[in-house]
Image 1 (cartoon, rainbow, N blue to C red):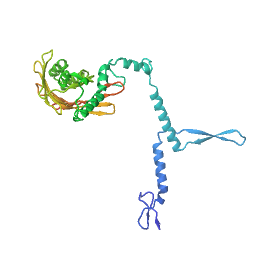
Image 2: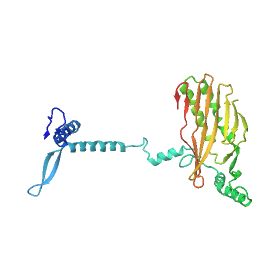
Image 3: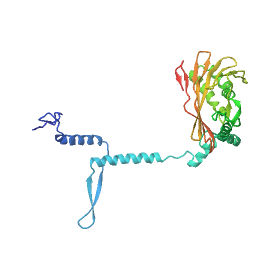
Image 4: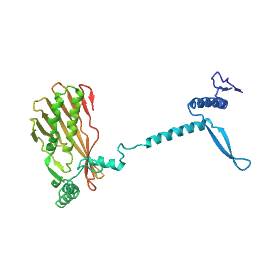
Length: 329
């Protein structure tokens, strides 16, 4: 025997065994749905529509019918959706130019060294040919070692594909904007303004080390490099590890109002028609008031290594941190 629960008590109907019987909940669920629909549609327009049907004399008889709650909700959603799409579609440039003209203006502001797909394109066809001859030159060395009875895998990197600079010399280019921004950062009393100058200094130096498609020479263990910039600031670098190659550096301002130190390490990986360079290490800028701003290094990628337009891209995330003032960029 089924026990029927009263509607105003809110209890669920029970059968004799104490289990819930869903069949007796149909009327209650219908009532709840009607109440929810009325509450949801109270702000929607209560309009009407016309149903065209054939009359007895073959003509068209218009019958005015009240739209149901589901139809009202569907029509309201349709109006809102269509209206938002129309508003979003009306997008015009301020001066009436079309998309092609705007794109031409944007592309016209790019560097002449920029690649069409992004990054810095290789400007020298000779360097491109040298880079793409690496595999053939290394295979020739392996063949000569095999004929002479030597170790086939004992192959050196072809010198024809190297540039006449070491990694220390290329790394020294990172300090060429220090004389412009680091004195401003040292004189700034606002920590946010100081962070702006430090970030600008490192970002501005990125193009100076980009576009080196030929491999730099590996410094000898213990090899050093000393650089004096035009404003009197000095840089000292040393190759502290041969494998993996690690270089340490120290740069001091002319008045010693700031100093930068750290180490750099590079690892190289190859993919499908591309080369990935992952710099590791940390760079720190120290100021007289005790503030230290540290930054890491983004990743580099050379695309179209063997065919296509060779280009260099800087990818990833570079983070600047001022632990003293709790600023991170």
